[in-house]
Image 1 (tube, rainbow, N blue to C red):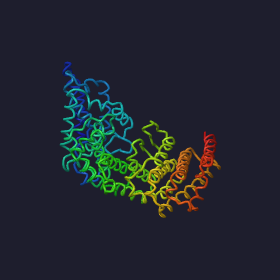
Image 2 (image 1 turned 60 degrees about the horizontal axis):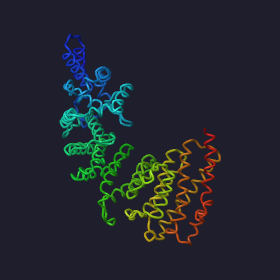
Image 3 (image 1 turned 45 degrees about the horizontal axis):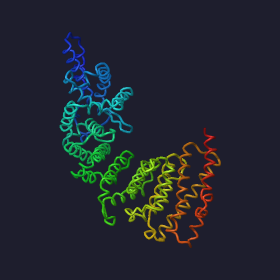
Image 4 (image 1 turned 180 degrees about the horizontal axis):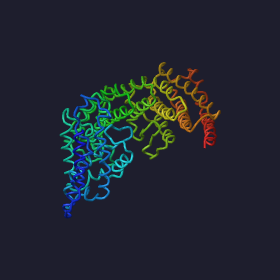
Length: 522
C-alpha cells in the first residue's frame, strides 16, 4: 500500500509538468494523466487475504490518503474534458482504459444506505459527487452506450473481474467484489429501470462468484452473494435462468442461510431472493397435496417468525409470509405491510384495497395452496398481534401486517375445510379478546390526548383491523363457530347484527377522536 502511495505521488508530479505539444499530443497527455490518476483511486490487491487478516480501517489508511488527494483532480478533469474522456467516436477511441478504470472506481466507491465500507472515501463532497454520477445516469450511459464502444468496455471489465475474482483470489480484492456486485445490479438488476439482457456466460460467472461469497463466514460477503443471486432471479432473465437450471442452484445455496440471518439487511436480501425463486416455480406445482419446496419456505418463515421478538426483523418475515400467502391473488400486490395495491382497479389506497380484499377472500377466493398450514397460521395470529400492540409508527405498520395475515389466513377457506375445531376457535377467540383490549388502550390514549403523530399511524391500522374483524364476524365466523358458542358471540357483540350503524360505531368514535387529535398536534 505504501509502495502505491510513492508511485502515485511520483506519477502526479510527472504528469503535471509543463510541456509544449500539438493538439494530438495534448489529448494523449490528457488521457495519460487522467488514466494515471483514476488508477490511483482503485483499491490495489491486499497483501493478505480476508481469511488471513481481519480488515480494519487502518488497513486502508495509506490508500485513503491517496484517494482523497486524487479524486478531486479526477472530478476536475471530468468537468473540463468530459467529451474527450467519456465520449466514444472516431476522435476518442483511446479513452477506453480511462473509462474502464472510472467505472471500476465509481462502482467500488459508490455508497448506498447501510452499505459503507472501510476503503470508501469519508469526504462528504466526494461521496455526493460519486452518487451523482450514478443518479444522473452517467455511469449507466458509459456502460450501455450505442455502438461497439460499450461492447469493448464491458469485455475489458469482465476480463478484469474474471482475473481477480476467480477461486480464492477474490479474498485479496474486497473493492473489486463490491464493484462487481454494483455493476451487476446496475446492468442486470433492480438498480436499473430497464435491465439489460443477461448473457448465459455472464450468468454462470455471476453464479460462481455468488456461491463463493455466500459460502464465506463473514455476513457482509454473504449479503453481497445474495445480491448477486437476486440479480440472477430478476424477472427479465427468468426464461434463460430456468432453462439453465440456475434458479435451483441459487435456491439451494440461499435457503440454507435462512437459519442464520439475524440482521435486517441480511434478512431482506435473503427473503427477497427466496421469494423470487418461489414466484418463478410456484406455477409448476400441479398438485397442492404434494409436499414442495414452497412448503419448506413456509415452514422456515413460520418457524423464524414464531421465535423472533425483534419487531424490525419480524416485520420482514411477516411481509414475505404475506407475499407467499398471496401468490394466487393475481389482482393484489403486497409491496409492504402498509402498502397493498389492487391491480384490476389500479388502486393503491390501503383501506379501499382492503375492502376489496376482505370481500374477495370472504366470498370468492379459496387459498387451497396453503390449507396444510391453516391451523398453524390461525394459531400464530394472537402472538403476532401482541408484537403490534403499541403506539409507535413501527407498531402501526406491524398491525397492518397482522390485519393482512388475519384476512389471508382466516377468510379464504371453504367451510368443509374449516370444521368447528377447538384449537382454531381458541386462537381466534384469544385474538378477538386481545384486540378489544388493545382498542380500549388506544381509546384511552386518544381521550387523554397523549398521542403523537406516529400514534395516528398506529391508530389507523387498528381501525382497519377492527373492520376486518367485523367482516369476519358477519361473513366467515359461522364456519368456525357453531351458534351455541355463546362465549364467542358475546365477545363480538353487535358486529354480527347486520347493522352498518352498529358495526362501525366504534370506528366513528375513533375517527372523531382522530380529527380532534390531529387538530391538537398541528
